[in-house]
Image (cartoon, rainbow, N blue to C red):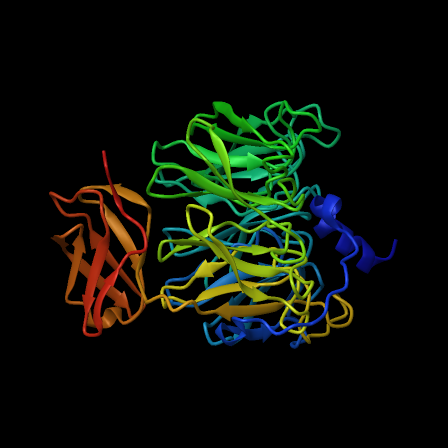
Length: 480
């Protein structure tokens, strides 16, 4: 096997059950094409990143720019970290070299220290992957080299919980009975690594998505395989910060199987997500599952009209959920879709290869209100690493949502500091937590900090600027 073939196999190994020959479609115009714009074609620069895939998390930085990873590309072809402006100006921050990791497919998470955190699928001291921290200027430090027994080949970036620690999962490794290990759950505390759990097939196998922190302080996630149903269709689970894991639901073919994307918890307390196969059409579903594990299908994908194989995390905006189908659809190369919490489904963009193909990574909504994402294939870029015009694109799509503010962490006690991202913050005159005014410090036009005031309760954060009032897109939880 030549080097290029080996690299492609490395980054696609966890999609093997869905790498199918795509059917031919008549190229029809997209009803929503005017909302969609290609911001950058990966591969048009000599050291560009390329082929961003699942989970491919895109993080908004304190400077208002977007940060993520390309699975291949960079100086040596082993993948790269990049920064891109909302307008589409790209800069490579770091090219992986094998020693510090290779083939990063997970994207990045913004930490409360202003740095970004991610993983690589391969590379490091034993070629089992790494966990890294990188500054906005591109200074990278390896926090952990996976050895196999402690985990191997992570496909998602770690998430930072309300306790300040980072939690994540590996696709393989651990001491479970699977041939390469069933995967692990880990914690990073001040740079120190702790393995919390070994998947064992019955309780899950091959987790690909980032964990999320639920309102109860536990973490929730899925594993793409494993469980107790026939053919090991995957599980939905809860795990405590101490590492106690409980399977809440075993996926099956009729109600969706093989979940790859992360979960989203809405204000109703339920979790929403997707599976890559199963359902009435056999190519994936959007589902709802309660914290106790009662699951229902909101929509079953049909490959010709909807697309199929959704691997991206659902994004909540304006009372609707948004996501991406990695394959098929009216033009044959994947779709972007929206649906309501009761299952009303519609396509907002169909990919046509020229505008990108196979949107495997998750959408992100910038605080300017616009959605951004990238595709694994398509576009016009050409690099040795991706061969011809299949390097992928970085795109934006507008659904007429207004600007807002985002914050981290998701919860805090009275007197704690909350970081707020937005735009036009230099003119801020008031910051309020559910109507209670807070003291604040503006650090730049796109970033300020505020102190949780006495009397604050769970609710939305607002920032008053010269342009109007900016409201957070989710509620801040005051602990306890």
